[in-house]
Amino acid sequence: MSKHFVPEDLPTRIQHYIGGQFVDSVGGETFEVLDPVTNQTYATAASGQKADIDAAVAAATEAFENGPWPRMKPRQRANILNKIADAVVAQEDRLAELETFDTGLPITQARGQAQRAAENFRFFADLIVAQHDNAFKVPGSQVNYVNRKPIGVAGLITPWNTPFMLESWKLAPSIASGCTVVLKPAEFTPLSASLWATIFKEAGLPDGVFNMVNGLGESAGDALVKHPDVPLISFTGESSTGQTIYRNCAEGLKGMSMELGGKSPAIVFADADFDAAIDSTLFGVFSLNGERCTAGSRILVERSIYSKFCEAYAARAKTIKVGDPHDPETQVGALVHPEHYDKVMSYVELGKSEGRVLAGGGRPENLPEGQENGSYVAPTVFADVAPDARIFQEEIFGPVVAITPFDTDEEALALANNTKYGLAAYVWTTNLKRAHNFAQDVEAGMVWLNSHNVRDLRSPFGGVKASGLGNEGGYRSIDFYTDQQAVHITLGDVHTPKFGG
Image 1 (cartoon, helix red, strand yellow):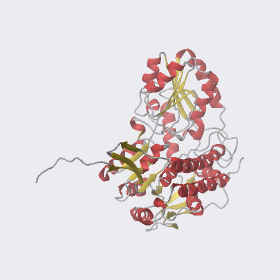
Image 2: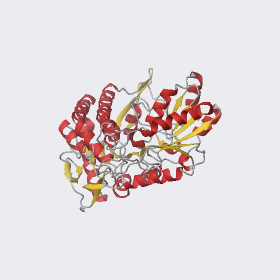
Image 3: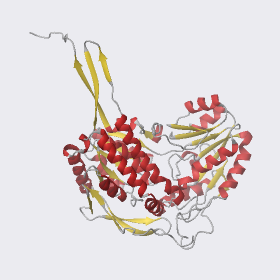
Image 4: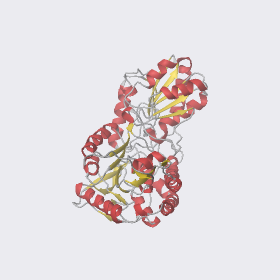
């Protein structure tokens, strides 16, 4: 496929969606949106400022305080959530085309995103119908029950790596809980987020429940975080941005859920299923162009198999197909934006002084015609990387991996825990006792034993240390978007000490 594919009916103008209407910024501000294969501007997007956030929060507040959504029975809400899921699946081909065009993700990997997004809505539709709350009885004297109620307007700030699907992770539980929302999508990839407006409208979601303001973090994101009528912020993104949001939320004592960066280790012991470990650790860092927070970007290998592993891993990495994201044969596409490409390439250059290059190390050769200026990076493998190297310690967020040897279980654990991050960890061993002990000792919010990142929506998702604050997933998401009010009823005589009189 040599000609760059452009989806039909591509918008040249992307607007906000507030109170059921597509609108421009109050002050007319815009920003340019690039396509990462040519790095040419294909659209201008409305750039949200404080005035636009104010309008969106006002619409969301009105819908929360006076609209039907928070007061609907769970089954009524669930019926609409299931219609949303059906509409997402019906858009699968269109969504995959738009997502690939906007992000540079390979089309085969973009195709699964609609199904995953739909499943988030189905899952929370089921959960709110089946959900029960606690009641506690003291026979003859007291009954206490929990009254769960949505908190209010939720501010949702989402990243650019798999935008539509990651938006669904926040939209589904917040809306299911009865909250209303203001979504601030990532500025690099605003294209697919506009689909939500039409999907929600046609599914029967009342106007004002979902609002979206496009724009930069420094303007739209900042105004949303600081808005006095937004009691909740859910953010997925980079750790330093998370720190800024944390500081800004403190002023209003806001609820926060943050899934931040990662430098996740994949630990391969000598007794591992070697071929499966190679397959999984390749997929774990090179799928989604390496632009995934849970990427296993540090591979720690037991010394007795280290040379064999490095050789096999590098040989496979060299054969990964890099090219046009719309080509079904492509396994690694174009990075999302020139700014991000420059960052990743700076780490590739740095890595040449911090490790031994086994594969990649620059731009790929033989790029498709017309895509020579695209943000392409060859899958890059560094071996013999020291634990204090920057490419071992810092999140690169691209198709770059560091491989380091270890001799003992204790050393493997020390290396695994030797970063500020703690999002995910992957352990490869056939020793059941070692697997469980290592999993419980590693500093990571999520651990996968003998597999890559396979999600169960019922389980907690989140990180420790610099990788996040709080967990979402299953009931933990519902807990975040709701207040649990304790109501106490006396059944017997009340014995109160008499003060005064």
